[in-house]
Length: 224
Ligand SMILES: *Cc1c(COP(=O)(O)O)cnc(C)c1O
Image (tube, rainbow, N blue to C red; front, side, top):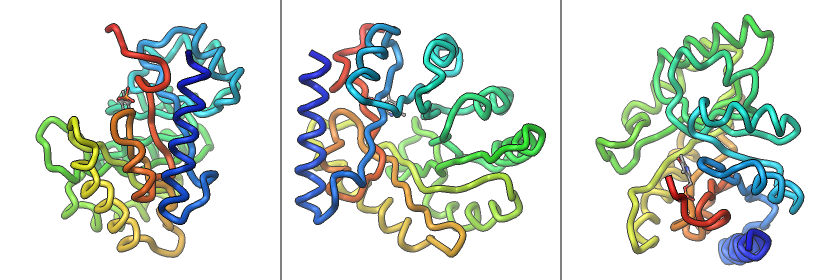
């Protein structure tokens, strides 16, 4: 089942990339394993997947311990008191969304003598239920990140509102791509665009996603 799902997703990603004049290899699949147990993670790794995403540290902990060789992405809202542990175990934080979090990331990364690789989360749809900076806040925020030498801003992340019709997500993804082009600077190229989930990843790839975060379409419906 997992193998069939994965093959299907990879074919869809490749086709969407080609439609957009892109190389399929420009898109990385992040397998989102919230509520998914170790057996399926092991299977996914055996099928060649290397990038995995979790949105809560508490749930991620045992999986990080079991699979330290995988690249773990932190995709959920990050509380300041979890920063140290997240920096220690995750390769990329997709959810940098406020100045106080950046301050703590800088402080802890300095202590640990490492970089904090981050994407800035932008709330393009303006939904109250979603985290992320508004478009209007983004330029000053990116500028402010220059004060933090340990923080490497590698790109932008967004979540589209959930809709039955994935076409409704297209303007959101397109806007993130425009913001990338508008605000990329030497030393802050914003190369990565983390956008697209199970229901809308095809549209996201057409609009320039470099990281798609997929749970359900890969592992099946979550029970919890
Ligand atoms: C759960 C989650 C996903 C994956 O959602 P699916 O619809 O299951 O693919 C992607 N991104 C974030 C931030 C998530 O929390």
